[in-house]
Amino acid sequence: MPYAIIFEAEPNPGREEEYFALSRGLFAILYEQPGFLRIDRARSVLTEGKLLSISFWESEAAIEAWARHPQHREAQARGKQGIFKRMRITRLEVLSERDVPVAVPHSAAD
Image 1 (cartoon, helix red, strand yellow):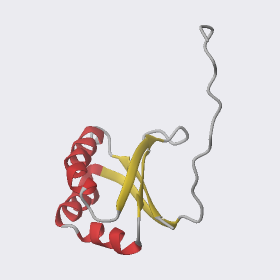
Image 2: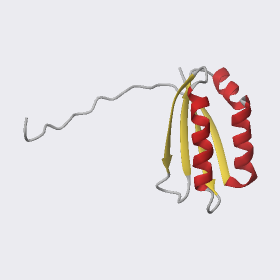
Image 3: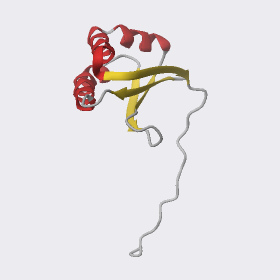
Image 4: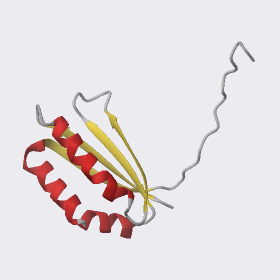
């Protein structure tokens, strides 16, 4: 089973774009990491200003290797040194994962 990392962060006022620029700079490196599966980002609808990132990994070893990557560590340090007022990282083991089929509505032209 894969593993997931949930990253929750609240940027300090005026620093959100700095975070986005920093994370865009990491994407090319991230997508080349052995064991990386996928990532998605969102804004909380309940907590104003909170940003969420969830990434999926093949193994804990892959997560640890990413955590030790020099450019990732530098980005984390910059986040701790002022970009964010709050950060939380949660590591989970995925117990089950499946795609759920959904009905596709027919158009009037069909």
